[in-house]
Image 1 (cartoon, helix red, strand yellow):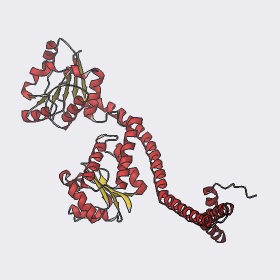
Image 2 (cartoon, one colour; image 1 turned 135 degrees about the vertical axis):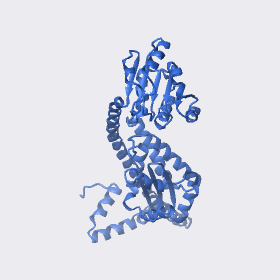
Image 3 (cartoon, helix red, strand yellow; image 1 turned 90 degrees about the horizontal axis):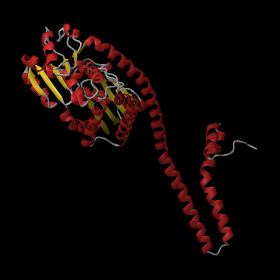
Length: 416
């Protein structure tokens, strides 16, 4: 049986191919059970927008690719788009994936949660056994250590996260402030998520489609505002983040001037993530406004990415440490059956020799002679097989077994 990881990701396959190989989340349990019935002894399937991976214990690692193609009704072999790792390489790959070192965005934390979900689903499906259980417990432990001991996830590398990081530098206590978010797409959703996670309690979601604004606002207990009413609510905002596809500005200089007057010139942070810009450039002239455009955040993102790259080097060192530990434990576990057999054999020799000695005492043989018999016979029975093997090894010129025996029995190296 081999431990194997077979998969493809954003580095090896196009989005079109990745889409065709996605496993439906609500069908994962029966899919895992089918996989175990067809090919594997243990299995976990990780399926996200950027990767599909099968973690398995199987006698036929190369058959996994064929199974994947058949399951998704692919008529063209996926060939070089797929990677296959076995044993130590499989463990190392799992560690890197969990730490975010194999992600599209270096160090992103979401993949660890997705791995945990995949593992939990496989547990529910009954397709996790001792090998995968050990793999994933080690994987989660390694990921936690990397998050704790390195800075891999401490710096923001998305535009939305960088915007919130910038806002944190201006307003240390988010709970006392209000954010006005213009748009309802992915960037604004991520911004809302980051703001909410940092403790900002009041948000206004402004969008041309009030329905989309309401849908997003519902998730964060925010208020939805139609785009036509943006000027009426601008004065409420300490933080404004805008990211729309509008061809012309949506926030005008005179609206900001009116808002500042109502706010009695309390400062405003305005972050324009749109191209073309949503906020008129003239707004930057106001003393009480800190206006940043998307290009202003690029330097922040570049610096943060460099910090993550430096942390990734450190993380790889930790992964190597953990791999060495796992390999050491595995070798130790491989010795357990032999140790058990050796102890059982010694116990059998002891029981047999003791029974012989008791019979001799019962028949009236002197105790001193019986004790001598017991010691000599037990010694002979225990060392007979090793002695025979060593003589045979010497005849065949196998010095390694002689050296191993000296080390195993802690014999003095001096041959006097």
